[in-house]
Length: 100
Image 1 (spheres, one colour):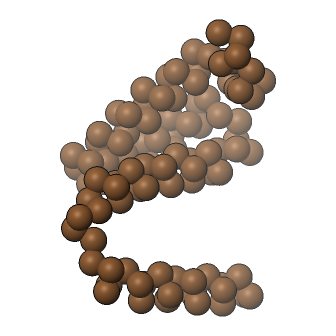
Image 2: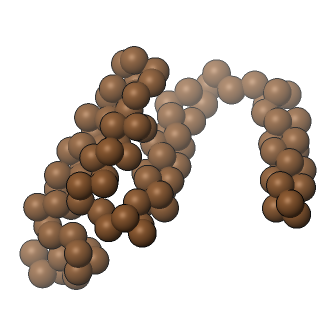
């Protein structure tokens, strides 16, 4: 048990971490079933457990993991002819956004 808690920040207890896991599962289910609301519910739930300075980065990592899982579930339905130009445009737009 000490090994598990050694990976947690000082501000989050083991109970809080377990609660976050179950909240994440619930929010992912809501997002999948209703196609909206899960991310916002997750952000609100995180605000009770995670320090405010880490709220947005932690939410971003959780959303990134959730979206990667969604990619692997629907991998057979992806059309690479559409995705490649989209990725190229995203990289170009990100570059110019960074310059602003």
